[in-house]
Length: 225
Image (tube, rainbow, N blue to C red; front, side, top):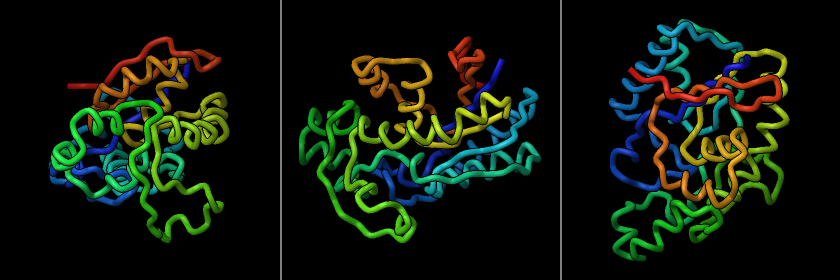
């Protein structure tokens, strides 16, 4: 049996302030730092260990991973990829969610946030972290479907082979990149994932999958107190 652990980052300052974050860096809040440490302690207490970690290029994710591994006294290879970034929220990034609801209406904002194939308005921004990414691949906005298209090839080509080799893998990512992974691991339809998109992925709470040799889920649970 293979075990895979997936964790959403701890609370960021912008989570706390109810702001659309997407690809913008927002540091962890004090609460987020403590959440990350708590997740690391929980994993250590339950006897988890890892051979390799995967995370995004966004600070709130890789800082959470750093804190988790430090609490576990682990020093392992860490691979960072933009393909595990949060969904790109386009022109909504940096905007307060309640203010956007007042401006565009609750129904429209919820469609941008929780539907499978609706994109927010686009916004072009330069970011040196993505200069080496092939032209046209860095998005200006994304639906969950768009995010899934960039995440799944990375999952299948870079992560799945290691799990099949018996490597113990931890992924530290974001709400929507995790939803895309859940959709693939559990074989969820587009219709069903839209329902799951309405469910908040808990912050800094390890999601544990027990997988058979074909990486089909045998069991799934959140590691909580």
